[in-house]
Image 1 (cartoon, rainbow, N blue to C red):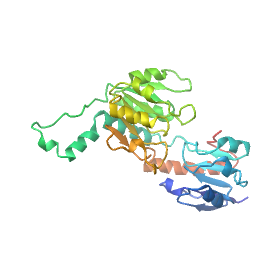
Image 2: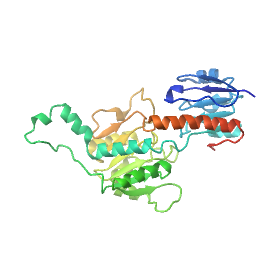
Image 3: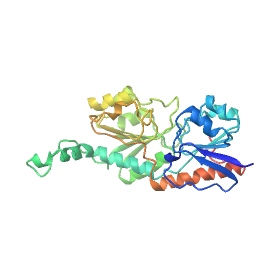
Image 4: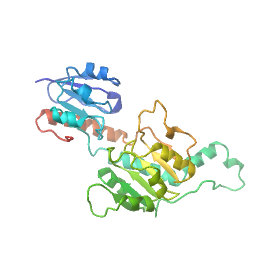
Length: 313
């Protein structure tokens, strides 16, 4: 059997994607937006490569030749996995590739926000420094990272990697996870005691808006909230309100509920104090993307070879 492979959103992976070592045909598209495009491009495909293209039941049921969906990411919420399981479509994903890039992005946000770098850079550009009488000015509070407490919600591979780096900077770690492990604490403890909270959980019905107005009010007024995991884990309106009111000290987000935010988003407000929003690039170091691209093809070759790996149930 010669497989037909179609990559629907090639522009989402900025790395070299090698050719699989088995007979196949291959097509790629920079982006795919509509269900009609998906159906037309996958009509003869046996293997679909996607990153964020939605693969829902209404679409999948019209693709009887499809045998494998290879997701070029860890998150698979764009795939109707129940339909795939019932209809013999294997779903595989990428794992343990962002062990450096995401933790480094988290720590960059932590340092920038604890030290209020955005506000100071903005003031310098506005000429504030040249107008003061002393050699410096202290208009915005600065807090040390060392000696502060980091709450890690989602203590898997990425969460542990963040914790390892944070410990090296002298932070105390409070870990939480749904899977039992030694040393875990409950969420209320994290909300009340943490100086910084970082999220590393998948988006599920149980975790959607897990942090809202109630949880934000439990945090310290100086607390920083970091989300490099999934948009939707935090109630965005509640966060915007908390930042404006001073309920928490700041936040750093790399994700939104809808990406890209073509219809706007409350977190795009440039007046939000001590808030950093990056365009879902915490995962995207050159090194990490190449690991991802190599593993993507490894996954496809393993499936075709009869020993599927990184299968998502």
